[in-house]
Length: 380
Ligand code: NAI
Image (cartoon, protein in one colour):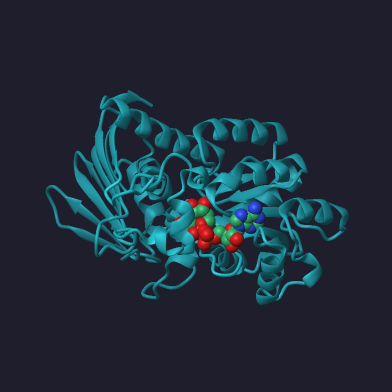
């Protein structure tokens, strides 16, 4: 049975000038199920207080560190129900561990950790704690991504033969990290981002989208990771050939030096009978192209979509939904799960990326780096 109160969320990250924390707050609160009541918004206590004021939360609950937030919130009767991690990659494991070991469920941003070894440690902590852990691979929240996934599962395009997935951005075409730009600075520092640059930052999204839509696992890959901008300490341009668990093959492109590109994540899935085409910069249509028969444009919110897609739409057809709403879908599923888990220890919903996606994403980065070193195919 649904709980009568809102779930209380505490966020780590999302301080002044940060990108994704504010998106998490909006998305979490969109459906009226969750309220952000606390946070350790920055590693600087002053900035955390300032951010707390901007989010209009009780000043006493804008903490100087996540350890302080966990300790103080545990003492309150109205303490937080879960923690959100929206900080740079190298802090994900320590924060998730501190929360889970204190009995607090976690919703984390990607990549799950900075390294593959770290995610294996995280997996053990999640299993031992037995608490909900969700991973915000945003694109899994789009209605038409759910529709594409359902169409693949139902065999509508026939056995999958080929997948082309790309995530192209242009914002790191110059050495932006040298200007002190907040988001570029830590992403270009392997101590904070992890050994993968572009491959970790956006390659993991493309990889997740491919496995999520097709229902197939990547079993081997051959990758090339380059640092095109001179002196950059992490990769900024990646190409990987993939083998998939049903014998199909794929190509994954991820680049942050693709001049002129904004947030170009796009997937094409080719089956024996038909293909599916989706891109997030035009997220409200999915193209289904048949080998023999007319092309079909499927619109978000339409009554003919699969049940999984209809379940996540909020607006009637024709009203565009986008990034916030996709993020909010993941929060809605996390809220459903958290309430069901509290009532009956319910299992994670299959549609919400969690610890398995976390481990596979980090494995993908690790395998791509390994293949780049040797130039060979590597088993997954
Ligand atoms: P950002 O640099 O804009 O913001 C990071 C925030 O974390 C800052 O406010 C910083 O002060 C704070 N922070 C750092 N260490 C902290 C600590 N120990 N305690 C409390 N706060 C701390 O970074 P951005 O772009 O928002 O990325 C954050 C994370 O979100 C990254 O892991 C990134 O990969 C992920 N991300 C995910 C996206 C998605 O589509 N799901 C999109 C963008 C980012």
